[in-house]
Every structure is written in C-alpha cells, then in structure tokens.
Length: 215
Ligand SMILES: [Zn+2]
Ligand SMILES: [Zn+2]
Image (cartoon, rainbow, N blue to C red):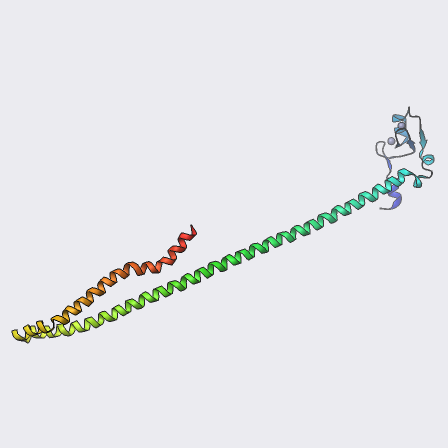
C-alpha cells in the first residue's frame, strides 16, 4: 500500500471520511469540521491541525506513539518465537515418550518370547524323557512276550501230542520261569499306572504354572 494512501486513510470515520482539520486540546482528539460543530462547540482550546502539527515529530506524543509501535511489534515477535520453541519442545517430548513406549513394548515382547522359548524347551525335554521311558517299557514287554510265547508253544505241543508225564514235567519245570514273568508284567503295570498320574502332570505342569502367574 503506497504511503499517501495510508495517510489519506486517517479521516473521520463518523462523517463519511471527512479529513481531520481540527485538534481539540480539551479532549486531546482530532476532529473533522462536522464533529467540531457537533461535539466541541463549548471547547476552549481548538486549533487547526496545520498549526497544532508544527514540530510534531519532536513532540512527546509522536515519540510515545512510535515507541508503542516498536514495543507491540517486538512483543509479537517474542510471543511467536516463544510459542514456536514451545511447539518444538512439545514435539521432542512426545517423541521421546513414544520412543520409550516402543522400547518398553519391545522389551516386553522379547521377555515373553524368552519365557515361551524356555517353556517349550522344558516341555520338549520332559516329553522326550517320558516317551523314551515308555519305549523302554514296550521293549521290555516284547521281551517278556517272546519268552512267554516260547512256553506257550511247548505247552500247546505237549497238550496236543505229549504224554501225561511230559505235561507234569513241563508244568513243574517252567513254574519258576512263569512266576518270574508274571512278577515282571505285574511290576510293569503298577509302574505304568503310577507314571500315568505323575509324568503327564510333569508335562502340563509348567504351562499351568504360567497360567496361574497371569492371574
Ligand atoms: Zn468527524
Ligand atoms: Zn473538544
């Protein structure tokens, strides 16, 4: 906006932009000729702007006005700068909180993964141990089965084709062997019943402990 337009704008807005031609000292106010007739009829000290404005650049009111302009302008700069640095700090703080949360999440996930890994390892060890033990039992049982089948073949043969004396001798000769085999299968059955209760509890144990701790 050119300078002369800005200065021309300083007209009375009450009276259709009439120029300020007067200054009323009593009211310390500029006035157009219409306002002067309306509001300052009884005022003692009224002079034309041309006379009142002599030496105005050195006057206290002009100095005060320019200082006020400087002060307000400087203050707007200070406020803007202050808010901008406040925004920057808030963004930094928010970012550092976000980073801390992400780190916390990663730590929690890695902790849970290590618990999972340890539980799975433990589970595999227990499972393998129990399966190995059951396989050993199966092998031992097969061994007993093989021996008892040999006896059965002999007893069948004697029953079909042997004499009474051969039956008598077989029954007494193998009595101790058969008693031993019976003891072995009975021991295996008792041991199995015990394992069924304790070992399967071993396997599910660690998982149950984990669930209890969650609550
Ligand atoms: Zn006026
Ligand atoms: Zn007046």
